[in-house]
Image (cartoon, rainbow, N blue to C red; front, side):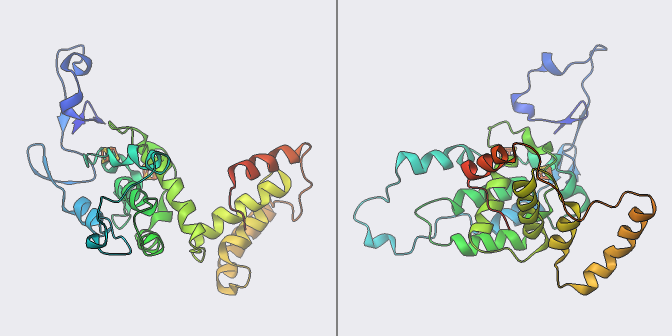
Length: 254
Ligand code: SF4
Ligand code: SF4
C-alpha cells in the first residue's frame, strides 16, 4: 500500500519507522491500481499480464520420460534463485511510471518472471517467451529504476536488461527499441561517444523514408539553433578501454 506517499509492504514496515512527527501515518491503496474498497485494489491487470507468460515450465519432452526429477546445476540455478523469490506483491508495478501512462506495458514483475523462464535450462520455449514479452511492450521500459525497491531483492530493473538482451540473442531486433539499443552501443563502442545522427537513423531505420521525413523538422529546428550534432565523430582518447568493457560484457552491438 501507499505509506506516507511511498509504496511499501505494510507487513514488513515497522510502525516506528513510518510514524510521522505528529503521531500519524498516511495510508493509501497502491497506485497504478483501481481501488476496490479501503486498501483493497483490483489486481486483475497485474495477474492478466502474469498469466500471459504461461508461468510454468514447458520442457521439450514429457515428464513421464524422466525417471527422476529434472536436475539443474547450481550454476544455472544461481541465475534464477533471486527472481524465483518474487512474491507477486506488485510493489514494483505500482511504482512504475510507464504502467501509469500506458497500461498495456507488461510491467517490471511480469518481465522479471519472463526472464525466470527464459533462462531456465529445463524450458524449451526461450524464443516464444522472448517474442511474447517483446509483444507485451518490453521495450517501453524507460530504465528509470523506480522499481528497484523490491522487498525480495528480485531487482526487476536489472532483470529487464537481461530480458532485453535475451530477446536480441533470439534475433528479435526488428522493433525501434532493440534497434535503438544496438545502434547506441555501436556508436559508443566505435567512438566512445553517442553519435546522435547515426542513432536517429539507426532507430528510425535508414530506409524508412516516412519515418525519417517525420523526424526531419526536429533536425531543422536543431540546425537553426546551431545544435545539430556532427555527422562524424572522432574517437575519444583511450577508446580502446571502452571497447574492452564492451568485449568483457559481450554486449551486443548493431
Ligand atoms: S519483483 Fe519484487 S516488488 Fe515486484 S512483485 Fe516481485 S517481489 Fe514484489
Ligand atoms: S525501470 Fe522500467 S519497469 Fe522499472 S519502473 Fe522504470 S520504467 Fe517501469
